[in-house]
Every structure is written in structure tokens, then in C-alpha cells.
Image (tube, rainbow, N blue to C red; front, top):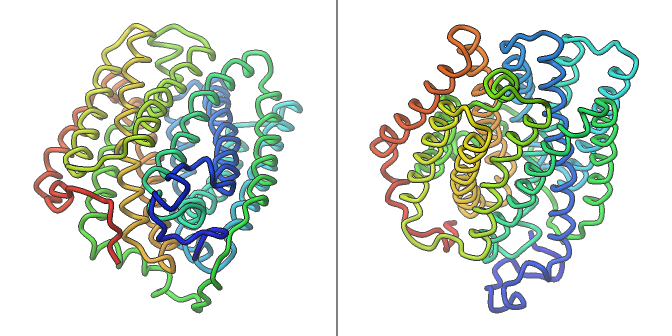
Length: 419
């Protein structure tokens, strides 16, 4: 599979100096991610604040994450098969269109007063399903947009799109929510639909997709591939367990309102802070991707993630809390870029959908189960102890993984694709 008028094996010196700005399909891909992720982040802030306003129960914030995860767990393998079988651009467009309809439903329910706890959870289930297909397919679309020699930079630049949205989305969502919750959801719907249109502008040359009949072997092929690649398995597992134990985003409404005594605007600032750190890391990695000691960099980044969680748990200052979240986000971005590049470089195109589906399952599991764990422990022990336990757990995972996944720790470079 090749990009339009490009050979994926072309080196940086043949790719107009290796500059991503010359690739128009990548520009459309980047813009689409910005719009859809801004919508997602605004929506997350609004749902979290609205749910906590309705029930004042941190466990319900965890349930939002659990419902999202259940949707992903049930559909992610099918999503991988779909990404390998059908036009990936069409799949992404459909997902973004349905997400727009879900946001419009949230706006209507809020305006008319029928949006209950159960209704929110039901809509989150739909959002989780569409997000599963969209996230899996977007990951496999990127290697068809730029030459593989630029994939590490493209991955970092693509991640920067997410972080621009993670910064702007929560702050904007919190500010608009204070004026009108309906306006937040209506804007999310418009952004999702705009992103869907932009994806349709991406032009690529592509080979005929695989037409393997649906079977258990086909669905689970991604698991088999990952289990036999210790580098990929180690990178995914390290992220999974660190985030499951260290997840704290679900409790941000509690910290913003009860610990820091703030408003929805303060919640937006807290949600945006990891994106600031992540964007800084993404920009650095776009221009200077890691060349040596890649494995050690991954482990160091996850350790920094755990330290950021501990500082956040102990903070009673908005400024310090934001700084801790910036550290957390920046460290996580380093891990994400290296992991995603390794997965794409070491996976044949005909397997990318199913391997990315498994990776998406682990990512969603780590994020959503991490939120559920945080909400559950907070309901028992309180928000601050729940986050402290998570930070310590993330550091323990790093220490254990150095021994369990020494193959990843010893990785030196990721410049040459392994086929």
C-alpha cells in the first residue's frame, strides 16, 4: 500500500527533504484528528461535570469509564478485521458521523431536561463503540499517508494533533459549559461532522484489501502476532498496567471541586494540562525522534508518569496540580510515540488493523479501567488516597517490567522496519 504518487520506502532525502508539510493527505489527516479530538475532549469534560452534578458520586464517574471500556472490549476485534477488510477512510468517516449524532443527542437531552444518569451511560456506550472503530482504523491509516521512513516523525506530529485538541478541548469545554451545557454538545456535534468531511479529502493509492472470511482465527490473529513479538508485547503491557493502576482523570472533577475548591473552568484547565506537556514532547519528538537507547527512554518516561501522579495527589495548589499533570502528559507522550512507531514498523500492512485493534483494546482498557479503578477506590478511601496508590503502583510496574520485558529495555533504535 502506497501513498499518492509516493513510494513508502522512499528515504527522507527523496521525500522533499523529509518534510511532512509537503504531504497534503497528511495535512487532512492531521486536521481531522484535531477536530474530532477537540470534540471528544470537550464532550468528556461536559459529561464528567454533568454526571457529578447529577449524582455527586465519584463511582458514577468510574462507571462512565467502565461503560466505554465494555463497548471497546466487545467490538475491538471486529474493528480490527473491518480496518483490514474495508476502505479505512470510509470507516473513519462513518464513526465520526455517528459520534456527531451522539453529541447532538446529548445536546437535545440537556436542552429538554430528560438527560438522566442512565441516559448518559447509554449514550457513552454508543460513543465508546464508535471510538473503538475510529481509533483502531486511524492508527492503520497513517502508514498509507506518509513514507515509512518518515513514520516516526509522522507519528509524533499526529500525536501533536491529539495534544492540541487535549489542550484546547477541555479548557474550551469547561468555559462554554459554564455558559451553556447545550452549546458544548452542539459544538462537539459540528466538529465531529466537519472531521468526517475532511477525512473524505484524503487521497491515497491502495492495494485491494484482504478478503479473508470472518473466523475466530482471523479475529484473534493480532493477539498471536503480539504474543510472539516481545518488544511490542512489552511496550503495550508496560503502558497497560501503569495506566490501569495510575489512572486519575476520572477524579479530576472531584479534585477541581472538592480538593482545590474550583469551578468547571478549573476542571477544564486540569484536563488541558496533560495536553500541554504532551504537546511539548510531541513537538520535540517530531523534530528530534529518539535515535538511541529507545527502550530505556520508554521505561524512564513511565517512571516520570508515576512521579507526576504522586505530586498531583499531594498538591493543594492549582498551579502545582497543573504542573504535575503537564509532567504526566509529557512523559506519557514519549511512551506513546515510541510504542506506536514500533507497532507500525514491525507489523505487515495486511495485519495492521488486527494488531492495532489489540493495541487499541489495551489502550482503552488502561484508560477506562484505570478510571473505574480510581472511582472505585475513591468511593472507598477518598480521592487523594486513590491517586496516591495509583502513583506508587505505576512505579512498581516499571521496576517489575525491567525484568519481565528485558527485550524492550534493551531496544536501541527503531529506524529500520523489521519484516
